Image (cartoon, rainbow, N blue to C red):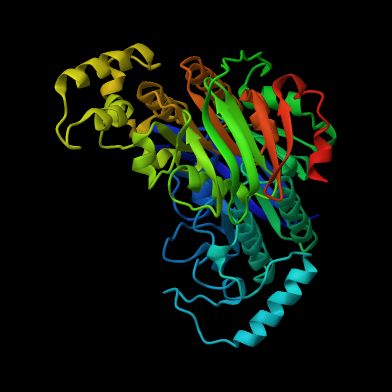
Length: 493
C-alpha cells in the first residue's frame, strides 16, 4: 500500500463571514495525480493558499507526510517538500533557469556560492532528460508563463519534492504547452512525486489523473475514478444540476470596417492583414503564443512595427500609449489582469462609470456633474444588480460581478473597437456563459471586438470568425458556420 502524503480532515475556513471550506476532506498518496475541480468561489483556491502557507485554517486537521501541517509564513513550503505553482511570481525573474533550479535558499532567501558552470551543465542534462528546449542561461523573465511553470516542476523534481500544488494555471496554455506540462507531470509521478491539480474547468490533466475530486460550496461532493470519467457527467456534478452550454449566438456583424491591419510586420508577426467590422467578434488564435503579444502591444501603443499600417474608421491609427488609444475609441481588457482594473475603494457604480467620467472631464480633472448624473442613471439601467448594491465596494463580490463591472464599463464607454486578451482565462463554465452574453450585448451596440487567445474551444463560443496564426502568419480563417465541421487537428500539425 502506498504511503499517504497529504490528509485533510474536517477542515473549515471562513473569510469575511463567508465559509469557503466546510468540513472538507481529502487525501493524496505518494506518486498520485489528483485533480480538484469546481466553479469559481467553491473554495479550491483558498485550499491551495492554505497548502502554500499563505492562509491559516480555522478548524480541522491537516497531515503532511504523516505529520501535523503547521502554517508558518517564515518557512518556505519548498523546505517541507510542497511546491506551489501559480500564474505569477513563479521564479526569480532576474535569475537564469539554472540558478532558479539549483539555488539553495536559506530562511532569509539569500543563497550560498555555487559553480555557475556546474549548474548550467546539470540544467542542460535535465532539459535533455525532460525533452525540453529551454536554455539554462536564459533568465526566467524571458520565458513564457508555461515555460516558467515547467522549470518550477523540474526544480520540484531536483529537490525531491513530495507534493506539487498547481493552482488553476493552465487556462491560457497552447496545446503544445499543455502537452509539455503533462509530460513533466507523468515523469514526476514515476518519481513518486504527488500532484494536486486545481482547476476551474476540466482539462487534459483531468484525463490523466488517478482521481478527480469535485468541489462545491466548500465541500468534497464527489470522487470520480478514471473508469468513470465522462466530461458531461462530471460537468453536471461540478454545476450541481444537469448542465447544457449549447446556445445559438446571433451575429451582429455589419459591412463597415472599424479596424484594419494592413501587412503588419513585427518581431513575431509576418505580413498580417485583417479587418474587424462593426458589431463583429473576431478571434485570433496564436498557436505559438508569441505573435498575439506583439499585436496586443501594437494596438494599445506599447509596441512597434517594422512595416504595415493600422486604420480606425478608415483613418490612420498610430497610438502613442494606452491612454491615447482610449481617446481614439479603442478599449482594452486582459482576462488575467481583469481584477487589477477593479478599484476596491470605489463603489461598484463608480468603478463602472470611471472611464466615461474621465473621457468627459475637462482638463482631465474637472468633472461635469450633469454628465455624471446622466451616466449613473444609464448605468443603473444596464447593471445586473440591485440599486442598493451598486453603492457597495466590489472587494467582496464574486468573479461574475467583477466581470460584469468591467464589461458594463465598456458598454457605457462605447468604444469603436474592444481588444480582449484571453477573455475566458480562469473562468468557469457558468461565467463563460455570462461572458458570451456580455460580448453579444457589446456587439449589438456596434462595437467591433478582437479577441486574442490560445484556446480554440473558447473562441468558438463567441466569435463570428476566427483567424489562426501559425509562425506569425494567418494560416487559416474560419467562419462561424464552419466551426463544427472544421478539422481542428490539422491546424496544430
